[in-house]
Length: 143
Image (tube, rainbow, N blue to C red; front, side, top):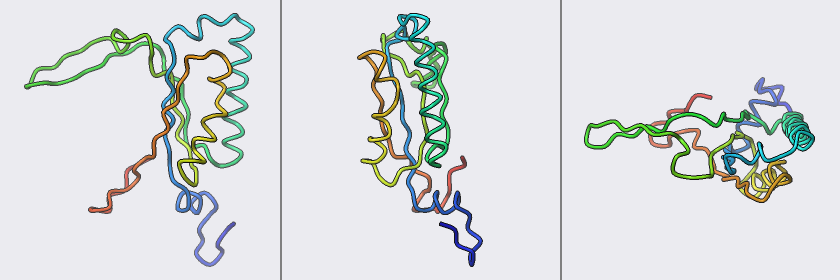
């Protein structure tokens, strides 16, 4: 669907018509390491298929895994605190997807197809709408 009169391309039209959602993927910090080499390879291939399908459907904005290292910083009463990102829990955020979908129900349906669910029972995906614009100031957040 392309508007010739306005010069709006399909990607611009898609971002105008569809909402953005973030999938925040959590799993046990050692879940991938528990898989045998063949299952690790199969999992990664299925992730590539999933990502390529979302790209072909023009639903994927970004997707990246996160390394299992890092720090959590906080500030209270002017004092900074720093801790390992995973010291309080066995569950960690292992990656994210930023997608286009018509609504929350479609975003949930897309998330349910994620290969994380095929390789263990510990994965969860938090599906969250993304605020792309401040209504009161019309500020548009950068991509």
